[in-house]
Amino acid sequence: MRIGIIGPIGSGKSTLSKLLSEHYNVPLIEEPVEKNEFLPLFYQDKETFALLSQNAFYSSLFLLMWKTRHERKCVCDSTLFSNLVFTELLRLEGLMSAYEVALTYAIADEHLKRLPDLDMHIVLVRSEDALFNNVRKRGREMEKDQEDYLKFHYANYYDVLDRIFKTYKVPKEKVLYLNLDDMFKESEFKHIVKTIEERYALLEEKGMTLEQTVYAKDALK
View 1 (tube, rainbow, N blue to C red):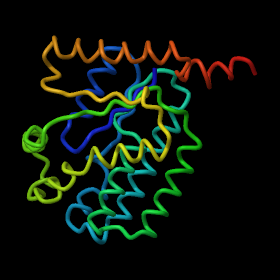
View 2 (cartoon, rainbow, N blue to C red):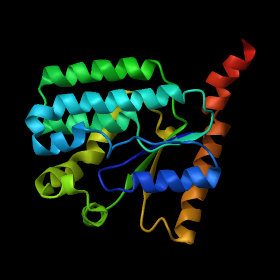
View 3 (tube, rainbow, N blue to C red):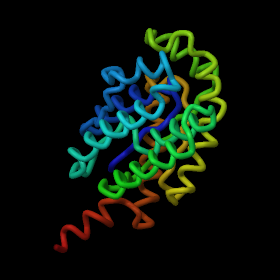
């Protein structure tokens, strides 16, 4: 089972990814966000670094996914679709031009052609207050004084993500929206795992898992 975690800034993508990776004892494909040298530059000067930082994020994430493309079971704490949301939001804010957005999509399309699909896209859903609280708790220096940027991000994130899923014709069965509270509560984490496994069982029933499609074809070669 290849799982991708998607959600707005502060939704708990890294936290849930680590918990699921440990629970299933599978590799964690972790995007090195805090180590990306472009991120603080983006927060300091969004107009200059919007396109440059986006392409840096896509490239680093693609390489991670490429190197682990043969892993039949893994958890990814970010996905290329997740990064495309940021591109669309930057376009809506006027920080990326139509040409820059088209160029970014063209690059993303080439990346997606070379990677196996994910079995499931898990979208983390939280209220705006909870998202802001999480950002404050983790205390990243570069995220301070970014309230206007984050409010715009939160207000538009899920609508933009839905449009991207439709654009790329991602089957609705492969998208799982999870309303989160406290993942560290044993009862909630058990509920999360149960929900994921029920959806995966449905995908298996419909013959829609990667194991039943791409890897099955590989076995016949």
